Image: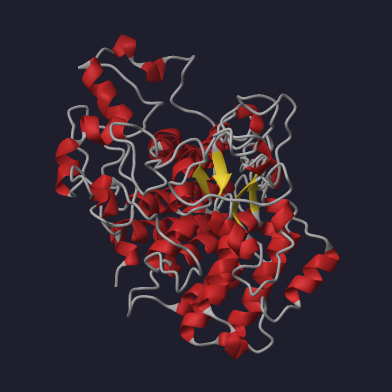
Length: 514
């Protein structure tokens, strides 16, 4: 029974709750591993794991959305919209939301409410909502109602539909904002800053983050006539970030492999990942009428001969002696692919040991507002938000394009139309993609799926010429649930949603459908 209970609790991510049938083995009574942990001690590790979860899975989602491609081999399974069977690759967010966050967030909220620490309670609810939103957008149906069922005899954990998860996210964000608005009890920035890595205890920024999440949640329903409300999306964005100072940035210590960014050279996780030809076309002038983007040299890395190159999905890179080393693509740090980066490599852009990793930005939200206004037919509002989004990304601290270059770029009518009526949806989505390159993989994937990977919307975007064999000629639409929980322990529930079908990963998720 001890082992059986361990398995059940492992599945739902209750790492702090392993218990036994025998009282003397009850870990909750062990003073060295208590079940009551102060909220401030729980928050920072949860934030860290959520950030790392995005980065872990970005190695694969980043290939789906063509941020980068695998240069080490041709016909890489992820490049071709496939997956690796019987593997946890692509399951890190699943693991972190259920395990690292999971019960720990419930414990955090319980401690906060008991101690009248309403700021911690508010952040806890917002982070719960953030986790569920990320997880459902990536995987589709997820376990929600039964996620933390403590019945030791329970072996099947049923999935909830996406509409149920989306509603739960809205409820949690509303509750989070309510708590963040409270000034009574034991509320102070100094106290909240003890555990808050992202905003250092600033409740106002957390409240704005919550409204940003509401905007994302509402905007993903753009294909649902009668449900989608552009006005509601615009209202949420206007209640969210006011400038780049509100950006949610996670900065790592970067001192060792234990506390550095997953994208940094010291951890050696990005050795074979090379910028795509798609992002190169967005920045080198191909898409924007020959106007070269000042962010090109900041975001991307040139080959040894100074020329910027990228790869197409599944292309791989030849290492034949006939291909000069100086003409080969380099990885995101600007070093040769496959080989570990030389000692002392600093990295570039956000691919450094300290990051930062943006989690939500003012620029991103302005592009969401621009698209919502465009769909509404209010092109004047759309153009104003579109321009603010470009300017915000150009001036973000991890970009910081030169002022003269920024001005010239923004003054080009091929980039920013002088007349609102000339603004196109493809311009909005291209600039949003650029502003999220290297970090906004989940939102990029939501955008691409909402428009069915259309090159009419994402100019020059092209699906792989060859798709993974089990796809049946269809593009990828979701990540399969984490193998070592769902495909090992939860097969009956997984079967109900079609999870054992070979092309399950091509099944469209609810929010992308009419």
